[in-house]
Length: 320
Image (cartoon, rainbow, N blue to C red):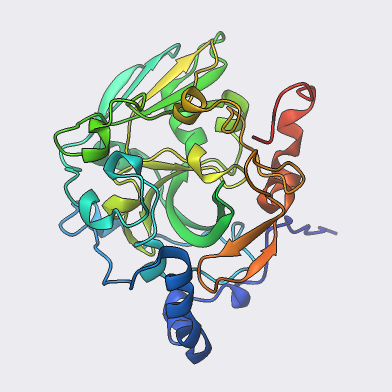
């Protein structure tokens, strides 16, 4: 007899509320405007989308029912207007400014300690990958959270395409650098370009996901089009946006925020309610959709899938 064991984040499909149904719920509409005002301080205008994207025909992709969550999807009109994207400014309302980003042509460079170094156009990369939709929780280090229907492919598939050599221990990721387009990159006190890194074990974990779309459409620019990372057990700053380079290295890369304030934003950045940020508690988080404060979960609720990655690393600052 086969015994089916559900993962800790799974729930019945009937409980994964479609966005359209969620947006039509009178109870939500009555409170959403207030939540937007609480979190952004401004009225929410109509979101901007990645219009004219040549990959539009790939969406919507089929949902992978192994990756659904207990929270209702946060409406697109909120998540598309409340974004951290320091390349375009240090505030949250950068959606309009981000439309200056040119996402075609867009090339991705794969190099370092790998057997198949290459530079590949984003649309050619998409042709090599099977896209799927996953519902993920997203927890910001600033203690707010949302639930998002990302579309993309496992990062493990890109790692497989590259063929890392035996000496490769880390995957270094780098975003674009174009201060003529991205006004935030003119701030020379930041160590541009934005860099992030994962161990190869993290990069090949089933949850590590390369995102190319959201809400059944190509990824809008303010989310980090055309290619960003989602690692839902870590704080959101680890999910680098608008990636142009993947490098396989033996040495651990120093990430963007680690260079700025290593005592506050470390390499690992795993979610832990018991480990406060130096300037605020991480015990609770505010839901972007409703403004409700709820308890934070260890590894953002994905501990069953990722806790084993950190055995033997107890001496590391895993939760900052």
